[in-house]
Length: 130
Image 1 (tube, rainbow, N blue to C red):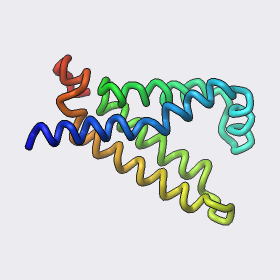
Image 2: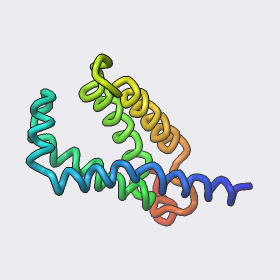
Image 3: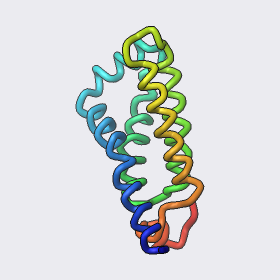
């Protein structure tokens, strides 16, 4: 049964960061437009490099199981914050759905932070629980 658990965690770690890796890459390619959008939403544009680092770099870290618990906690907090900052106005279209989607994603990352990256991870090879 343990092998099945580890395979399930690996599958989750492959699926969970796809959104973040793609979004981070999009922010790299559309840097100035993303910065303008952030500023229009009241978020300082100088935070964009940190956002890219978390989405793209953190997404890759989760994918490979490196700094998994720490990255998962930071990503969960980030995802909840973005729910409030960018999807808090429920009178606008799909915002209520996007708000709930962010909370669902955060829940998944909190589970990953709690139970760890599984056997098939860099963290396990290094014998680290960060």
